[in-house]
Image (cartoon, rainbow, N blue to C red; front, side, top):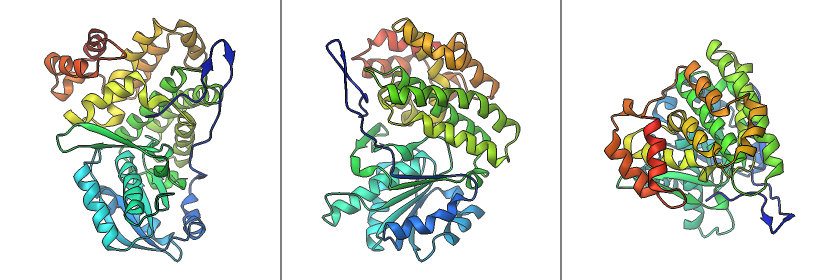
Length: 361
């Protein structure tokens, strides 16, 4: 579970700030060329490549392999949406059988989360309690799973679950926009809204977090500016780099993983096959409207980045990008949403959660 970065004790402003993003982040078109030096730095030569079925056949996978330097891919494992735990465990067994000494993830959040878990599972298997196997992430979406020590997966019953371990944080991230041009535009834009969700809910999280507030507001400004331009010019790698930078800024030590929109989205996402980015498109504006009544002062600050009526501006952006806005499109009705709200009730009462779901129906 993600925690607030800075806490308030009594009336005094005090706290502790701890960096927990990956140690090295490269960005810009062509930055995959840094892969060989990162592998050498991490003393890694036999890799498990964790990716998706679509990317295995993509020409960019060849670009990645040519950038390995002295390292080789010993085994390639494919993980599907929401990282089913059975696939993660099978991938860990295959990687162990290939005697790998490092992990390379190439894909979106599911591939990266699976790779994080595999890195720790293999380390535990080898008795390396202090750290996971070296892991370098090459993201092809804007979900920023690569920036978090938590990893989500789907259990055997189809429910979303998570694993948090500081050893899961990747050692390096390479944001090479040239490797993302094959990512379908709907997926690219919806994960961009996921990044917006990170920024908004991190900004609205409990406690004080002055460093990440600055980054979150800048991420919001950049996403509002650059996502529509990516839609207009799908092949412009400079614009995609701007998208990636904004997504990075959205999750610079964020408490958003326990934010209202995130938690509600995870509750229905894996169960009904809705991608993470799409759940943010469906729920973020409605969660914001609910939260605005509780924290009007924070929303006044948020409006400096979004313009007046932050929830309305977010909903307008989602609509202008042609992204999904209605839960009913996924075959879900009030009975399923009532069940989801009841299961989530705790910090928020079930009726409030249901009303948010229904507003998105």
